[in-house]
Image (cartoon, rainbow over all chains, first blue to last red; front, top):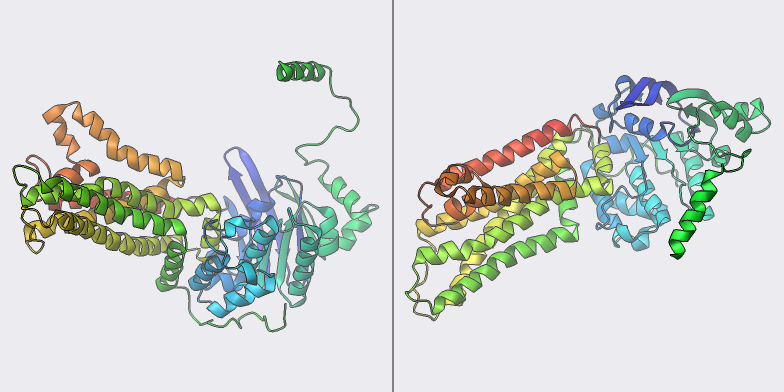
Length: 260
Length: 270
């Protein structure tokens, strides 16, 4: 179980996470939902001890991350596609991480097989496609067979087959009784993958509920989410206004400059 | 996914806690599994060998016949280039992790950041000193090979007066590598850290040169100046540091950079 209590994180004048508290339980996929820039990635980094909160704390199974005896055997994280040296092979990347937590070489080969990178494991990871890079990230997360999995936007940039693969993987991991916490800004994806949702906006908790409950509040999960986040979205497209006049002048000016 | 993947069943799992040896193994795998490591190490040896051969060939027909000290001093000249390469390698051992995002995987695996830096210093340091010594000896030996058959007498490699500059040049290279690790940890950006390292080497040299003899009082503490006047010479130039003092100053620089780097590393967000 992940317990976040009163997390606050400030970057200069920006309040990225604002008194955030929530629990993530085992045995279900918990979606971490919020508009872009709402503090999802910051929260993930706070959980992993990569950033230090200005206030509050996170505990994983009752302990702080930095007190874990073998971190990779307790928590597996996918923070970003490409958190590896581009010149290193997928196998060497995993071997290094495995060595740091006393995990065997055979386990490296095993996870390479699980994510389907067995045939390309000797290639430099910098040449991988985005989908392969995500799979390598997931292989690293699975390396220590951890009871807790954190994934930050794992389906970003994936093709439909890859998205389906991750969805099925997350569900089966949760089905084995693990904690699965996955962030996304894609409501439709969360509707298909998650059982529970932690929704944040501007770093604050907006809802901690089940997918079914949230969907029942409005006509659909998407409507409910947009209602929830309507006050905290930083950028919104204008659907009811024409572009203002001066912009056309600028456009003309630009096209002249280009043809000149 | 199979049912066999149950928490705690990982082969190789043991009780206890991660230790220095686990982290050191990771750092060794990381260092050796990147091609640029091997390329830069090869160039370091090549730089020393290349200059050594050049000097040897040059002295074959030189009049008057060169002294052993002259040959040693010049044959070790490749260190001026080699130090830049090994310093850059030290920087890259750290900044390569930041530019790729690997550093977050590293610190998620080992949250004890001081232990990660310690392992990196030990592993990289061992490699840097070993390659530094190898390159220094290779430089002199290559020079000797190039000079053989000419009337120039062979340099007695077993003579302590010759052995000292060769050994110290290798140590100097290792220390510049560690200075690079320190600067990389402090600055975290490849360009910035390499710029700082090269700047600290050359800028004071140009500035100090403008003050002639008076400038030496300050210049004698500049790494490059220490190399060519105190360390990589049979007899240190008068008014400069002794070989031991020169190496001591270099140790101090590397220790300060690593200490400051560590201080920031354990406090900054990764």
